[in-house]
Length: 282
Length: 282
Image (spheres, rainbow over the protein chains, first blue to last red):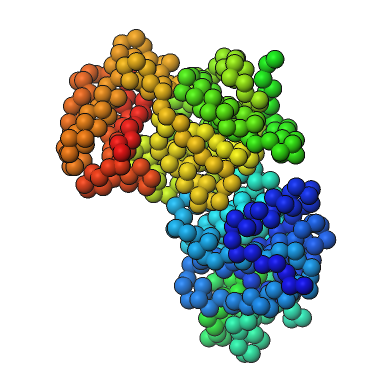
């Protein structure tokens, strides 16, 4: 039986009220679609932990800092529905942009200093857009638990802090990154890579692993770690390291002296595709 | 029987869940205490429209732009409880600042262009603090309806837009301003006025009424209206008009040509006390 797909906020709220009356718990997996094995892990964990699993599929325009990225973002709703069906999802919430934003939002969530590092400076407005749409989804779906991938570590840290600072009654679960055999973190944007670019794309993971080795060997100077890690990125006209930073896992602030636990995170341009990845070093 | 008073968020959530299971509706009246007849109107309307009436009493530190105003803000919890008891309130939620802010909030609500005029420029961070604490209270109490006074018109417009932009499932009710016989809008801060200041304080209402007369007589130039209205403020070392603006009631933006419906709003310093008031001109 195909998974029920709801596009209207009012209809979703009505179904949510039914579930509440029946005393069942709701797990939400917020996605932008183009579901891959990373998303499948999120859905599988939600399936194990919740009575009713809702997957939202919404390519959120206000979190894109570049119009071409929004336009090129893969949209594969039929395939996504098949994944959801296979994994026993109860409900897909797939609103239009008009349904979510009938007018440009005036009130938004300011993420404060959590947006000051890593992707923040390179994607102006991105995390404001993420935090705002996630809060909207929480208000609409009112999930008991919500699932986010550790691949987007800055997003995850921001959402954890969002529910804490604003008293949102939703528990946040982080789910481990899924990787290809060569270490490339799964991402919907990987679909855009040419065969050559795909081969080069593993460089980001190699750089993060080098940082992990350096820290494991006792190196504490972030500039030294960064330099040795960046040296793992092959010299290629198709590759450009946007950043590689070592930050506190919760506050996302860099420190003058690296003291685990830390998160090493980077962004690498591969041709015209921007990939991110990170490792927690405990 | 004294009204049950709850200070802990966890205890409030537990009581909220009980009310939800019993199918009763919840009306919230968010206040900073020092309850007066204006608050009483809010509570009375909530009492008529809701099964369970919750009054929150919390002097929210992050919405005060001046430390002396926070310190001087009247705190009258015993009298407030008596008012709540008399009006049949079911529950008082009176958390400490530590309960609401165990750590300084990093994520806050940015109110956008709704904060650009009226009180916004004169009280930096005020409406961010208001919108953030109201959203927190909504997340904790999860009211079906919440009640706000029209005296704080900018706050009311911002909260109306907050629930719309963020899909908060709470209906917002605005309740008419209560005035003294000479027109002075009721406010907790009126308690601070000396007898002389109290006599002078009606000047703000007189100025707003003059603006109303000018608009009613067909005047459309905001500068002319403002000048004639401000002329109603007596020349006194104890009085200083901070602003008098004519704005769209929803967007809170001024227009080059006044076209009703508009809201005329002003702030008047009376000695060391800042008073605000406004009129809707339909």
